[in-house]
Image 1 (cartoon, rainbow, N blue to C red):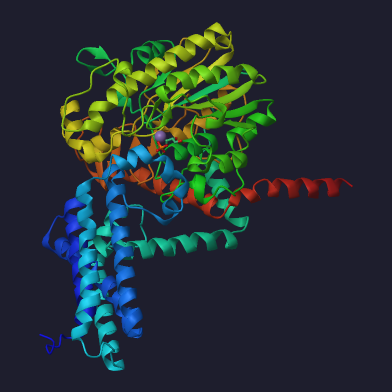
Image 2: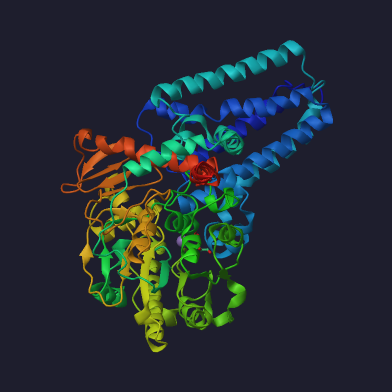
Amino acid sequence: MRNVKWPKVLLIAIPTILLWLKTYVAYKTSFSIPIENVTQEIILLINPLSFLLIVFGISMYLNEKNQRRYILITYFLLSFVLYANVVYYREFHDFITLPLLFQTGNLGDLGGSVSSLIGLIDLLFFVDIILVAFLLFKLPKYISNPSFSKPVRRAYFLAAIAISFFNLGLAEAERPQLLTRTFDREILVKNIGTYNYHLYDAFLQSKTSAQRALADGSELADIENYIRANYKEPNPEMFGAAKGKNVIVISMESTQSFAIGQKINGKEVTPFLNDFIEDSFYFDNFYAQVGQGKTSDSEFLVDNSLYPLSRGAVFFTHSGNEYEAMPETLTENGYFTASLHANNKSFWNRDVMYKSLGYDKFYAVEEYDVPEDETTDWGLLDIPFFDQSVEHLKEMQQPFYAKFITLTNHHPFTLEDEYKWVDEYNSNSGTLNRYFPTVRYTDEAIKQFIDQLKAEGIYDDSIIIIYGDHYGISQNHNKAMSQLLGKEITPFVHTQLQRVPLIIHIPGMEGETLSTVGGQVDLRPTLLHLLGISTKGDIGFGSDLFSKDRLDFAVQRDGSFATKGYVYSENVCYSKETEEPVDPLHCEPYMEMAQKELDYSDKIIYGDLLRFYGEDEASKEENESTDEE
Ligand code: GP9
Ligand code: MN
């Protein structure tokens, strides 16, 4: 045996092949990547190869000792990246982006969520590393000279690059404009592979940094023109309907519209909200428009009337930008502004971002008493949260703008039995089953909060806005969802499931249910108009939900959108009436607008363009005053 010489190329070939296979197995077992034809399957199979060949090939330039170390460390790191994506995908049905990886601050707090997502079986992801270590540190004994000549190295890399072009060529033929339209990470991973996807993501990241450096005020002019051209007069009857009132905003964690009015074993899941809706304005066609930043994205939308980013959380990536956010506007109008949320202040980078948005105060977990028996995986339960928040509210100078962010109805939706006031649902998804008791719990928490507001005499002086921040049940639970809804979860139904409740309660007004199509981006102008504050000339993409001239429209971060009669989802136009695909002509008039709004919003954020806002006017005024002189 000692005399047998193994081909030296095995040193690179074995780890490459093992990781290649592992990646493909992970694609097939841990991600649900839809494959429509043989070419797609081939692309999926070959897509990790060129990257792995190149990365492991670099070892040919190292000396024998470093060669082995390099291969093992690289093998481990890439396995880890793959595994991290697998775990993330289990809940979010999405792939990790670089900005998300930097949010390590959040990872610690995710404890309960993450541990419910990983299991012993996952060790299988790492057993091959032991095998590779063994091969690397035992096998070379049989290899006389692991160094590679120049021509061999050259031929090797040429082959790797050829494979990579072959891959790209196939992918481009299957999916034109693959790299220019990047809102769908799944398509990217499917076509260029997870590892190349991460490289591409890193490239995007450096591009964003450059964008700010290069931006100047002139880019804002186009955007301002677009916004001015699309400005809709607010409803004059509602303008100032809540003038001078306190503003109480409640962000309901993971609450989707389908939960409202739902019954489990004959019992209402939202008995309080069902009543509250009766004497409020209730919007039943209101869409969440968040991206990867989830709750923080919804806050961003509501406060700025700008869209969040297609990758990463803008709360992290652009917390240093200049904004014209709601708290700032309200401060100028005599309000005290605060956000209340019993979680670590650094979660979603809130402590930093809130300063940029202009909040006067952030009541984070330190401002709350959190006894062990009043918590879930995500910390303080909503009932004690609201209960203690009332004390904070009483101290605030009036009028105030106070935002309450609930937390109990968060994945993994765990709750002690004593707080379960409806049964769990019965399906193959524990997540969907547990969801209803936690929604029911938050409903009760809001009920008690409203009772306390009444007792404290705050209720009649406050406008109360309640909205859902984003979906709670991801596509991974489609089977259970389809059981609940009694229909297949088509892309149409999926988009419709992004609807979240919006309730606006105005003291002294009766309210009604309105089916206007709108989204979180519309909340800022709607609220400001109710308070009698004009938003004409503001930079933002929303419009008054009460306006008579309103265009029924809500676009989502993945490019899907809803109009009065149609829904555009995954490149297909659906009729709302039949829920079936129709001629794309029906959706076409809105497609350009959808893309334009998202692009303009991205431009504002990436270029930090609001730092130039008002410059024009300021310089105009300056000119005018010098003219007068
Ligand atoms: C964390 C809470 C939940 O503070 O807002 O965040 P989410 O995971 O829903 O984005
Ligand atoms: Mn949330």
